[in-house]
Image (cartoon, rainbow, N blue to C red; front, side, top):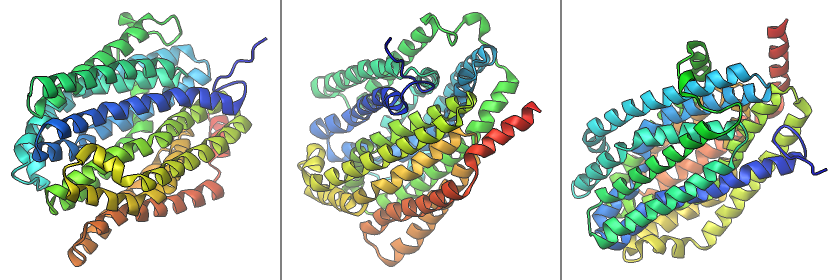
Amino acid sequence: MKTKHTLLEGSIWKGILIFALPILLGQVFQQLYNTADAWIVGQYRSQDEYAAVTSTGSVVFLLVGFFGGISVGAGVVISRYYGAKDTAQLRKSIHTTILFGFFSGLLLSAIGVSFTPTLLRWMGTPEEVLPYSVEYFRFYFMGVLATSMYNLSMGILRAVGDSKHPLYYLIISSVINIALDWLFIGVFDWGVWAAALATTISQFVSMLLCLIQLFRVQEVYRLSWKELRVDWGLLKEVIRYGLPSGIQNSIISFANVIVQTNINSFGRETMSGCGTFAKLEGFAFLPVTCFTMALTTFVSQNLGARQYDRTKMGVRFGLSCGVIMAEVVGVLMLLFAEPLMELFIKNDPGAVAVGVKQVKVEALFFCCLSLSHCIAAILRGAGKPMIPMFVMLGCWCVLRVLYIQTMVPLVQESWVIFSAYPLTWTASSIIYLIYYFKSDWLHGFEKKLASREA
């Protein structure tokens, strides 16, 4: 008989890899999806328009990150009930999550469209770039409802161990996005807003595909129109697990907006170089992303099933893979920094030089970035979301902002901003390692579960 490999049974390393590899491939397409806008705008439009597109990440995540954190909480709750085979609570949590995503997406779209100019001016966006940034952001935020619904639907599928269908939908939406980018900008010669329109259309396609799958699947997690209602007790549970991650995402994003404001003060070349590095770093972050998602789901499912030894073994494997893969990618980025930057901004040597400098400062510290995210994911899966929140806020927000706000006026060089990242990644890694080895994070969960049942 063929051995079944899932997160709950069979070979641990095969189960995690089978779950994580589709996520990795999906993240590759997601990054292509995000990078296509910048690359095509860089080929066909002005340097100011390119700077507008590449400098958008921190503001987008400032508004989207909070609800992304809540979706992490939803995934933990759903994984826990799925692992415990509690069908009634599983179904209630899934339907509650879908409704939450719908209403939060509407709210986020309204906020983003309304306050885009204010945010961009507050960040000190150069006047020559500002009009393009405003039009790009407004069209982007028109599609945030689809982004919110897609991410939560994808999170539900992954929480129950299905990482393949989200991959298929990402491939389809990525192809649509790239094709529309080329059509709207390369053929029709529309402005930078058309890149955001292409993203919005492709996001709606991926959202619809995910929802169709959830309504059609013949499993216990199938969606039903009749059951679409909010269970306030479960919503409180989702928020309890997800709120720390949401607050963490928002405050760190706020800190990164301050960082972006300092980057903007160095002018368009620095904006373009740093924005291009951010796109490349997104690819380097892929191993981290797929293993953090896999680790959170693995830990949550196996703790729900009370498989504590299996949890420990899976955690060791996931940590090792995440750290090693991230560092290998960092070394490759360092070796090929200049040609990679020139893929986007070949005719802007000043911006290329800025991007290469940032690679040299940060790339070899991707191991610390990965370690921090992996341990944070483990703790969230174990029902301890407050620890990652406090560590990330202390290191990636307070320490990072204090360092930049103190050092940039003293040493007015862009490398000072870049150095803040490896400094804060290293600090958070040290704190996480101390907590991981000294605390009773695993058996603390076991004791808590036993006391509740008593």
